[in-house]
Image (cartoon, rainbow over all chains, first blue to last red; front, side, top):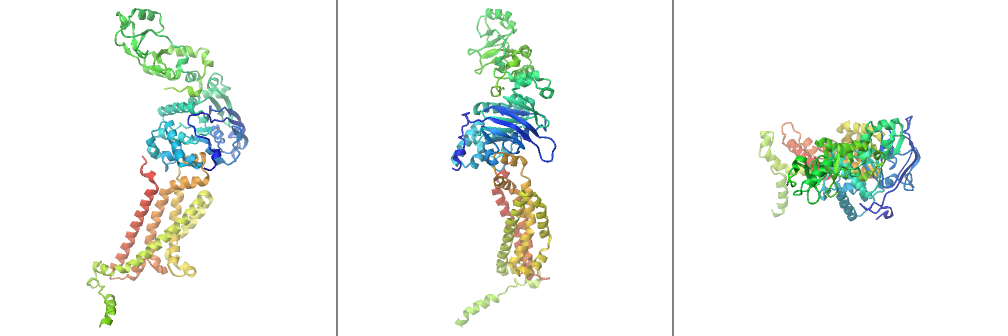
Length: 399
Length: 240
């Protein structure tokens, strides 16, 4: 096997191979144009984090990203992956060690899914068996049935194609991934699913990811760090999502982030991390007196009926428990039920969409954790907690 | 008499009746009896015709393919190549034969050169279109994941241009089958021999037979290329 020493060991879930990416005063000026596409950009993306480059069109975010794999050559400055300058050596070899995902996906229509995913391993001279093992691993990783391996890209859906695009980029377990508006061409429902899927995947693979988007909401959702860029290729602010929302560096960032930045903060917090209300709990056949007493002093005007394993079954109003024992069936079904891992933003959306002002919140095993209300969310927004609480992107995955 | 027997046999064949049971005299448009009796005389011209067509298309393909690859790499070459092959395409083949006579003399080579020159434009045009139609995102992704220019060309661009390349070959081949009947004027053989020799204002059967063989040959080549195209582009059959 040629160049065996250059092959990173494929390890889908080991999370060991990631490198920092450091921009050092990087500028790009296209010939014949006055201004800069990217001007004096310096920033460091720590290994294993997602850095989102965001800004209006023409701000140089894609150019900035493309200079990492030299599909655009920088005019001055340097970019280091780990300790190595990208300028060293042959661009094609460099690119094989950097995952690359683009909006239009760009799968090879004449090659099967397996061949598409195996492209870079084949370029690096892996033997057939190793390639096919790797392809199976990756298909499993992106949740695609092995029967898809022999199909052509034209035979699968856009969402599946995008997953295959990600798998192709991960084929030789590169330490760095570049993603240029990877979900931009996908419809909103599938986009959200793919975003969550990618964050779950990232929790496993822990790559250093440079992610380009023009969508602030996507930046906030996906980024551990966000680099906001403005016209002329200037870096306006480089900060965590919370910091960006709480303390925009200037008017441009404040404007770009949007007037609803308070609401956007909700996307950064999981429901389980706020103080949920405790509702009285009742099981079928229990005496009703203690429940009635609890209901009088509770924040919620309903009791939650749960099963043997504390899973919510439905709501009980004061009238439902006028008898001596708790009835067999709840007064109304436990709709909606929210997963505590979901963001407050998604929780609020569910509450507003479903009618009731309360929702039961459950933990990972479906057991009742508390009750979420619109009031809790508005209290949260006016509290200090919002300014400090923040969780890494990969843990922010929600329904 | 015994020593005369072999001679008698030869002369018997030589002098056998090839008149088609009198339909030459009847002067019908088509004379099946004559065809049966004269089938042997079409074997050599048909084989010569195949050689003319295959040589011209293969040579034309190799040249046009190289030109298209060059023009794809260096875009400024595209216009001059298109102009040059365009001129070769428009020169009437018969004039081409006479222009070539002082250089290559009379014979199949002259005919093949002229026919090759004719195919270049068709194959070149189709192939450059095919290469141009490769989606930008596919070349961007290919470059971005580390294919060299050469790998991009051979592993991505040419395979994806294959439907257009095959389409060009089909047009070029079918036209060459027809055009190769003119090779007779360069003394290049082929089915044209039978058409010219068989030319007779009153008796058409010979011309009809030679023409029909050419048409069948064109259909056969076309079907073969169609099949080759299907085998070379399995992904096109299954696209949504």
